Image (tube, rainbow, N blue to C red; front, side, top):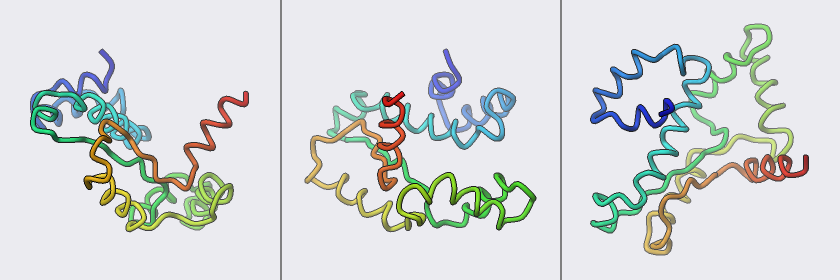
Length: 148
């Protein structure tokens, strides 16, 4: 069983915390952010037809938000900085995420608006999906991957 499966098989949040503390070396920085996203995605997929959800007609979906204007952007900038300055990190993040598409980070409300729709009866048959709200970045990366 991989790390994602192992953490999802824990019985409680507290057990998951113990597991994480015991396995920091296998998913620690700088991959812990990505690992947490993998866990959320796997959880959504694993619960789509789980009796405790489907038996109560509970749908489960998640968003895969893009680079979004939140306070964590400063941390991301500093993590990728080439010289220790936030400005350097901003330039790296611009090159990685922004210049190839719409030139700006998403706004929190742009991540939230689709959630209102996905949670409504308009999408009553939508479940088990990770919806990428990223101005097409994931689609572009998928397209580039098949181009070879």
